[in-house]
Amino acid sequence: MHARAVAATTTALLGTAFFLLPPSDARADEDGGRPTVVAHRGASAYAPENTLAAVDKAAELGTTWVENDVQRTRDGELVVLHDDSLRRTTDVEQVFPGRAPWKVKDFTAAEIARLDAGGWFGAAYAGARVPTLQQYVRRVERHDQKLLLEIKNPELYPGIERQTLKLLSNEGWLDRRHLADRLVVQSFSADCVRTVHHLKPGVTTGFLGTPPVSDLAVYAAFADQVNPSYGSLSRGYVSAVHAFTGPHGRPLEVFTWTVDDAETARLVAGYGVDGVITNKPDVVRGALPAV
Ligand code: G3P
Ligand code: CA
Image (cartoon, rainbow, N blue to C red):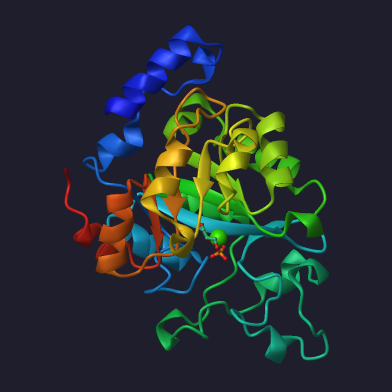
């Protein structure tokens, strides 16, 4: 356990959040002291983003953490896809030519299940499907991986926070073991992150963005992580975030995105980030020696 974790434990013992505190700073320990490496949309430089193949590829590369994006179909199924439209990452234009602009929310789960979500990436992946969130978490679990789940465009999907938590609960992802160190729920929407925290306070949460330091106290009430793009980051900002204590009595963490080259990985590691979100987990891990 490193110094910040010891300080957090002390704070928690003195404070009110002890019952919510995970047993240890396991993420830092398992990564040999280096920042946690997270495969962005799976290992998406090597397999089509947000597919089960991208999860498999991350596992093959020895990457424990994967990130994904969750949205909802017209008939209420949670699916894993980045854009609010199916156009870029599936063959929806060919299969449903009259349905522009091909929004996820306008298609049923059965319609989306017919689409090819891998052919655009490469012939080897033709036939890959848009996974449901249920299929996705089962695959992550099968690999004994961990999940940084992003709720995407929550303003389009009223109630998606509660629905996502229900699915995670049904799949066993809100038990003590998963809550301790296997799941983070993040969003660009502060309201969404706040809602997740209030509905299930034991869940580790992250806010995507770079709020002004003067606002960090507000975020620290409901978010355990502040996760900025690497271009908006500095050593001073990381230190400022770390100085705040989050809702579980631990210092706020910083996971930055999307870093795909060794030089930038070393730069942000030097800033003291806790996690690096990357399409190329092998490159980032190779750039960051254990300390
Ligand atoms: O996890 C960080 C990153 O996924 C946020 O950006 O657009 O790739 O979802 P985006
Ligand atoms: Ca994302």
